[in-house]
Amino acid sequence: APAAEAPAPVAEEKPTGGEVSVSMIKELREATGAGMMDCKKALIENGGDAEAASEYLRKKGLAQADKKAARVAAEGRISVASKDGKAVMVEINCETDFVAKDGSFLSFGDSVANAALDVGNEDTDALASTDIDGSTVEETRQALVSKIGENIQVRRFVGRGGSDSTVGSYVHMNRIGVLVEIEGGSTGLAEDIAMHVAAMNPPFAVPDEVPGDVLEKERNILKAQALESGKPAEIVDKMVEGRIRKYLEEICLVSQTYVKTNDKTVGKLLEENGAKMVGFTRIEVGEGIEKKEDNFAEEVAAMAAGKA
Image (cartoon, rainbow, N blue to C red; front, side):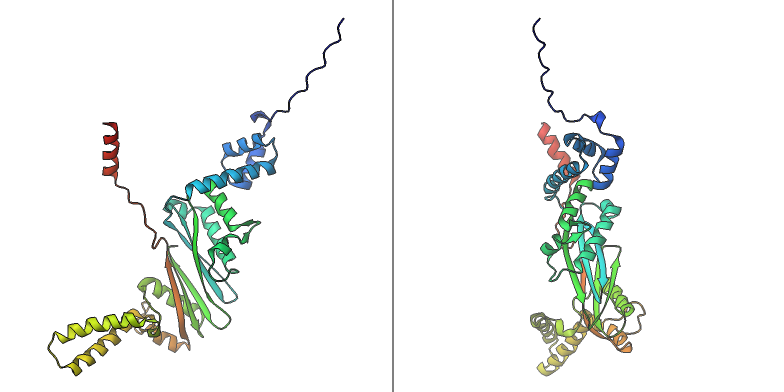
């Protein structure tokens, strides 16, 4: 009888869904934050190797992050961190107010703010490559985009303070952030003034900060108004200088009435506490980002025209 043929070698197959346990999927989901079905597919594609599956998801996440990067992200939050006399604020944007309240998004903001404390020159590229929990800020951001499904961007960060000054911060509703830097005084005093800045939004901290061209423009406007009254030139000049002083009082933080008590200027408050104004920084979520305006009526009309 002819000899039996040797069995053909069996090609190695990828494991099927039945060979990937629920516990493996659950562990990968907890490690990566990706969806259950994505985790299952990743494990199947990579023969049940959790590390390879995690890398697979990360690559998939990068592709998703790139696709979502073109979408407008004008919502978000301001996160603050401080240490050794320095404080930073980071603006992180997302697409919706709903995601701005998500726990993962909030945690990411706090981690990025703490990382920003060690980055100089307010360099967002340097911040993107800084390590947080074993991955860079950028890698963590991309993973979060994959998990949440929205465009998320670390837009900017600002810092203040040092060994010779005191910094206080205030964040209003996660959307308006202020850092106030003073010489002398206390962190509590700086925080109180930061609250005033959040509310009143003064353009400048002290008169010396006001650019000469801004003052000159205001002076010319006031002079033209005063000359119309028909008063002599020397009287007009005195009127203009008086109004310039009043203008400076309105636009400079130190000469504004302190909103918390309404009984003294911010400058007087500083003086009473043996402190001097250095400066402040105020940022607001989404300022300067052009938001997409949806017009429902136009959208319906366009759809109807397409069907005609």
